[in-house]
Length: 392
Image (cartoon, rainbow, N blue to C red; front, side, top):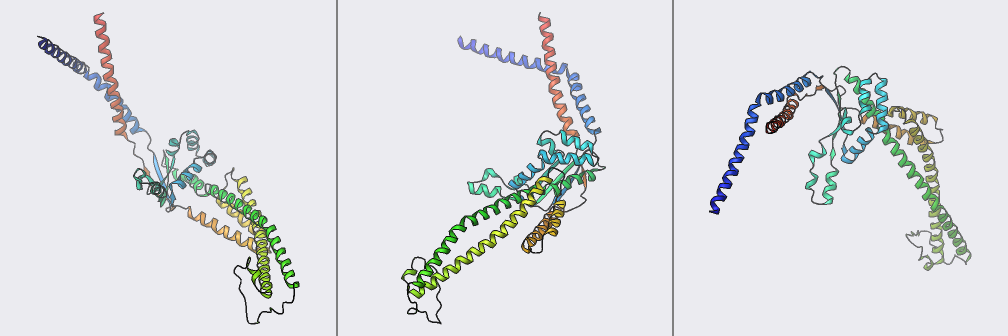
């Protein structure tokens, strides 16, 4: 008897569920035209608006520059820095591209900035390596050091006319302004290294002079300790001392004298070489501090790598004729700067301009799906309110 009651209860629940599902279906069927119109009209409006909206255009420059992922991230940080973006905005306004300058100035996130100008390596680090498959830390580090062989700069504008002129502003910034950050970092590193060299020479100067005086005093005492004639070296014999510091006392007197003289000569040459190195390093330090000061003062304005190259040539012309080593250093620096300028030129000066897809169908489908869900929900809410009114 209990089993029959349980079966009847289960059948009733199934029947009730079927009735509820049929109710939902009847509501949808009853409101089918409303749902269709409420879903189709927004999708058509969105699709038509996207279709009539001006098309965006894309221009890409390719550079033969190989960068690993770390260097690429540093490049992006420098390009998208507030300091550099302010320079770009000012240059765009000066060139008459106020609309693009305003877009760039109003971009608050990295995603918004990359919709206007973005960088990409070819091949991409993320396509070429799967970091999750690294078996150990060493393998992971090797994957992270993978280099992209080409660097691409993508520019997007909403009008085809004038895009090349606008792109030249970005090109000049990337090719002429951005490298100065590297120049500044290199000069700072050079100044620090030269100061460390001078400090090292100064630190060893006192000990070398003390060692020289000690050896000179030792030589005098050896010569005055007695006649060296008994131990006179044969005229055809030349001794070489690799390390006689602690063992020279066991040599005959004449040999000890020669060892002391050899060590004195070695110390004198070391002191002389250190003095030459100190004087050259001091002159280099003065020059690099001058270059660094000039770069740091000039960079807040729109200063280019070409202008820095002209300053190097002017500095070379001002050098005196009695400083050939400094002149050679500046000549080498100028050639290095010329190479830096040449390496940041694009492979193609006038690349093709491509129209970007508007995504009309995709955006219309998304609008249709959203409108469909909202219209169905509205139908059920409306039907529920009607039923509640009838009951009350």
